[in-house]
Structure formats: C-alpha cells, structure tokens
Image (cartoon, rainbow, N blue to C red; front, side):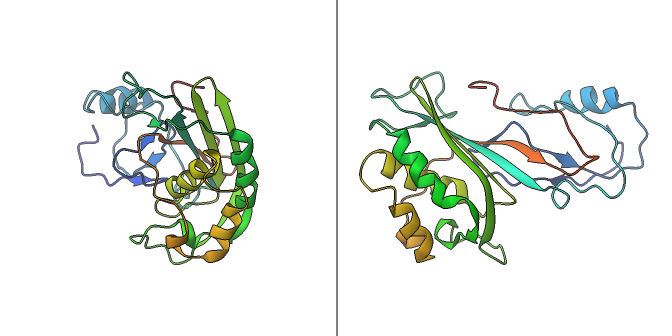
Length: 222
C-alpha cells in the first residue's frame, strides 16, 4: 500500500495464541494516501484473522509503545463441566466451579506499584519487575468468568500467570491470601502454572491527550 518498506511498532506484544482487539500499531512512511485507502488497502492484503479497524495520521512525537500510559487485558474463562466447541481457542476452559468472590479478594493484592517477579516468565527480558496495576475486576456472566486487569505495562506472561493463581484460589485449592504470599516471594516457582493463552485479549491501550482513539473491546462478552 505504501509502495515502500515500512516497519511496524506495536503497543504491546502478544504471545502465540493470545488475541488482540485493541492493538495499536504505528509506522513511518513518505507515502501520501487518503485514510480510507490505508484502511481498505491494508485490509485487502491481510489474512482473515487480522483486520485494521481504523487508521489516522499522527504527529512525529507519537509512538505506539512508548507514548502509551496503560494497557488493559481481558482473560475469558469458560467455567462449565463440558468444554466449549464453537469458542474453542477463544476462551480458556476450567471445569471446576470458580468462586468469584474469592478471586476478587485475591485480586486486590495486585493493586498498586510493586514487584511482580513471581509472575514473569523465565524468558522475560524486562529490566525491572516493577509494574503498577491500576485496576482489577472479576465478573461472572453465565458460564463465563471474565478477568479485567489494567497496568502501566506488563511483564512476559504476567497476566496468564496471575490468571493461573486466581483459578487455583477460585477453585478453593488456595486461600485468597495466597496471592499476597506469591507476590512477596518474588519467585516464579511460588506461583501456579501459566494459564493457557486462548482466553487472553489485549483490549485497550490508553494514551495521553491528544492521542484519544476509538474504544475497542472483545467482539463478544462486551
């Protein structure tokens, strides 16, 4: 579309199997195109699993990753005895009943700026384990349990490792205070297994004014 090589910069990295409905990408180009040409032209070259939902020109100061103030992830758990079929690969299946009140209590230990070393993968190359979790919530919607977490940034596998701990607590295998113990350990071995990638969605990236973009969320369970 640009008729020249372009390099993409993403707001957040997603592992294989993780989804994004609110990813933000920027690139620099000398090409002059109408916004609709960028949108429709790019989509005509993309596979069915990827689509550009909007596009706009930005000033030179904007960077998709470094200008971002916060990222929000959603983790969707199908909590029922029988595995999902139509949503296979789009949600995480957990067949033991989950107590969301226990999960909510545990999640409050995550709020604030602290060391999340217990929730980073061994492949994480971040210089610091310090992250600031701004918001956390858990909701049940029928057979679905939905986790929402927002932070200034995330470590590699951080959300999936948190989800693994929360599912153990919600299943009654651990007490809500175990979340605090895991955090204080600052050791990945103190936590639970990494939850599957299937249920994880990058749903929003927040930027300072004037970089206000259209809202986005998963295309189901809105």
